[in-house]
Amino acid sequence: MSTSAACKQAQAARRVLGTAVVALALHGGAAAATPLPSPGALCKAAVQAAEREAGLPPQLLAAIAQVESARPDPRSGAVAPWPWTINAEGAGQYFDNQQAAVAAARDLQSRGVRLIDVGCLQVNLHHHPTAFASLETAFDPLANARYAAAFLRRLQAASGDWVTAAGLYHSGTAERAEAYRLRVLAAWPAGGGPALAQRRRALPLPPLDPMAAQREALAQAWQGLRPAPAPPGRSAVATPPGEAMAAAWGSSQAGLRPALALQPAATPLLRR
Image (cartoon, rainbow, N blue to C red; front, side, top):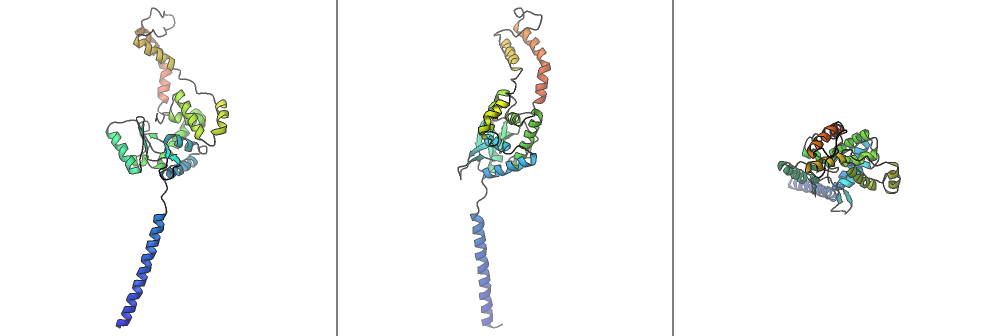
């Protein structure tokens, strides 16, 4: 091969290589210019998918996610559920990424903290110990939303009503469930806003805890403030507080046991 031919081949190779480098640079620049989905968008997409899969009323789970973990997005300022959210013993924190959230949750567990809510839907790891195979899965937006959707469907099957189930998602206590339910309705486009008053009129308040008054009487009897209600056929004046408390406690067991038995299935995702 002549020197002239070799030079021409080398020049052609350099042109091809240069073209490839430019193409790669342009491709890399285009990829870099494409923004990654925001964490809030990840939550929203996961919630929408979980709603469809579980057959939930449109945007009900989205309203719950908004109440549970929403925050202003640092980039856009839009308020949206945040997948890297932790609430531990009533104190909430937002993290920048999944790795930081997992590390924080693991540290809380190592220090013996029990009540830890995680992810878009703030699933409580103590009350739902078998929900996720790992902390990484717990903070996966789709896994978190799917579990919350299944839990909400179970609550609806037990209560017979989606709006009641939304309150039970947070608490089995009537007053706390009612307050939470109103917040969800206000955030639910399909069920809140103008329809809120109509729903409030149509849906009765859940019954008050039937054991609340009796527990108060027992507590006061224990403290010696006043005797608990005497069993039938006995004098309230002649019954010492301690004896009355024991009798009232014994008579309450039939009503108390069913409530305790139902608690795991309707355990709230406690946040507040």
